[in-house]
Amino acid sequence: MDVLSDVIATMRTGEPRSALVEWHAPWGQRYPPVPGAGFRVVLQGTCWLIPQDGAPMALSPGDVVLLSSEHWHGLADSPSTPLNEAACEPRDDSGFERRYGAPPAGRLREDGSGAVAVTLCGAYQLDRARAHPLLGELPEIIHLPTRMGLHPELRAAVDLLGGELADPRPGADAIVPALLDMLLLYILRAWFDRQPHHGTATGWAAALSDPAISVALHDIHSDPAHPWTVEELGARAGLSRAAFARRFAALTGRPPLTYLTWWRMTTAARLLRDSDAPLNAVAERVGYSSEFAFANAFKREYGTAPGRFRRRSRPERVVTTPA
Image (cartoon, rainbow, N blue to C red; front, side):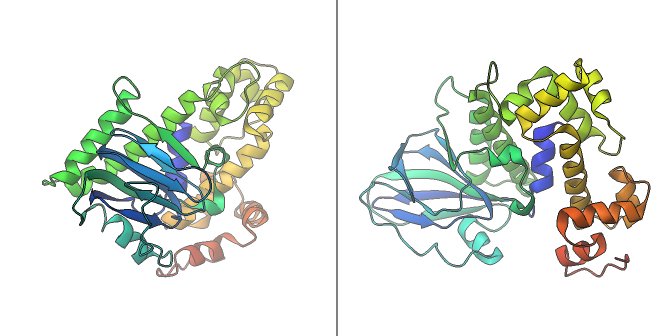
């Protein structure tokens, strides 16, 4: 699995939600923060994004917005239209579904008598307790125009998703979640493609495009159980040990083995949360031959034993694996 896909798969919890909304002016809706990331896509007409901080942003047909902040935002036909506060109920699972449709999608119509705007609204639930630094570099608002000639893959995903929500047919329950995953990855890819990748550029956009560092990241993500050393990773990247270590840390913000350990523990947490694999199997999957050594490393990262973490992350299930 490539790094970007792996990061999203690890942070994802639950299913994404989406809704096709037909707005009739005058209209204005205020949205609370979501436990992850929200998106807005304009399919027809025009509207305005109203951030909690900053100036209103005009949106046109084809525009895509990804919001990943802990602030509220509004969507309205005009910056002067009052925002409806009804959507600002407490942030819980039922509220998440009411705002973004029952899984995987819903269709809504907001009554009015004026000009029509049609939007795709939705959200992804992401575990921000272990947010990958790649996503930590994202701005609070990503605005991507997808008009003719810009981001054709993203435009195609928007068209497919809009079609499925406008006219649900057999298979939609499987197709819509897949299209939502595709939409998120295309949004992130389009944003990363716009970032500087060369020269003195740093950060994960530069890391993913750097031939040497991207090879090392792929190796770590593909086989976290391997006993990687800085020398071996550097050799596979075509760099000396010292040169590789400097470049990796400069671009990702962490030394190679620090990142390896962090990713092993993040992967272990996902396995504990999403599978019933025994602790010794989880330990082996992330490179520990000793369950005791794995438990110590996990507790240093999470502050709790692996078995206790599993029980807390899945309280509805009975797990008999010892702590």
